[in-house]
Length: 146
Image (tube, one colour):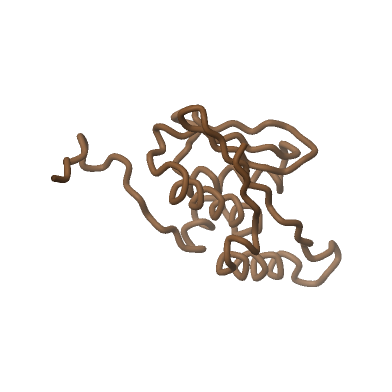
């Protein structure tokens, strides 16, 4: 027998499009895409309840790397408002998810953005990010249990 959730709008799961990501973040870039995909992975394979999950985003602490946090929020449901996500300044880029004393760590695979000075650089970054959205998880990041 399936038990009804206590609230109608609690713990909804939604697949967001690239348009949704851009609307939330203000533009579409690789870091929000990777953060979103990692957040989705954590929700689908580790913990589907964003109230039981905690995220730590390790990065430079400034854009564009800190844009990972926006993707993680929309993908996993960990949010600044619930206080279950934090950015930790680090030279390494990784995202950890924790629940019930268990932790998984996602490490984005390296990628190169179009260089400064290229005509239509922002448009090329957007195209690159859109293509990344459609890649397999294994082409974007690795996962390890801690």
